[in-house]
Amino acid sequence: MPRMLDVSDDVRAEIGDEEADRLLAGDNTPGSYDCTSCRTPGDAEQERTSTVLFVGDETAVLAFAHATCLPSQIVAVSEEQLQGAVRSITGEDGEGAADVIPDQAVLGVTSGLVLIEGELRPALVVEPTGPIARPGSTGGGGDDFLPLLIEQGFLPATSLDGVPPGLPGWSVLLAMGQLHAILQPGNNGGSPVAWWQAHHPLQVTEAWRAAANKTQTVLLFAAPSGVIGRQPREDLLRDALDKAAAHGRLVACTMPLAGT
Image 1 (cartoon, rainbow, N blue to C red):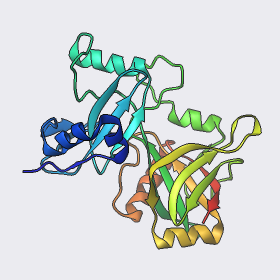
Image 2 (image 1 turned 30 degrees about the vertical axis):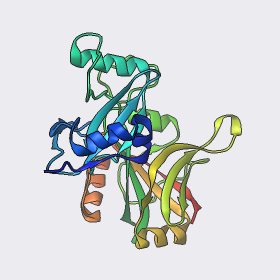
Image 3 (image 1 turned 120 degrees about the horizontal axis):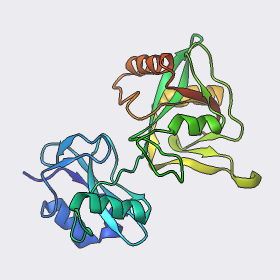
């Protein structure tokens, strides 16, 4: 059975056409793998699978993920992270190791309409695929995602009864009806820079876009890894947000809409 593998143009350009074609033919692809995002088993012969290339300063390592968890993409990591992950798998210097998965979290963003104060409002939910460590820390298994956001001005959301306050300098970039980025203030008052940027522009529903254009704002909720999850319906998403808020594991803000 042919493998159900996705190789993005960026990954193909990095690894070369010959290697990409071998992957697609199944020559170098494991039938089963551990997803680099959710860490659960996957099967490239039974379900859509993404190739994810982790690139350090001198080393590149190919990993695999459920296509429902991550698109095929290139993820930049430090050389130290990459070499450490290789050594942890091989128990030596890592030469010849394939399919190594470094512990590198990626921000996942989901769009949905959330009923607040009697009105359906456009919202984005940000949840990392793994714990987020404070820059410069040596790790230790903690998750500093919410504290880091609170330091940036996000406020804890104890309920979804009201619209969260605005966050100066931040905005959501929507162009040609697609979600492109979440922007944060630039250094020293410079131009805004991308805090999160879509690998490929994300489609949003007509209703979501209409609501965003009506209010010219987007609500943004963020929770630690594993708190919200991928919810197939907006009512289930709302339930997950309510539970996260009740347990003190949600921050929120309102951002102006940039673009249309």
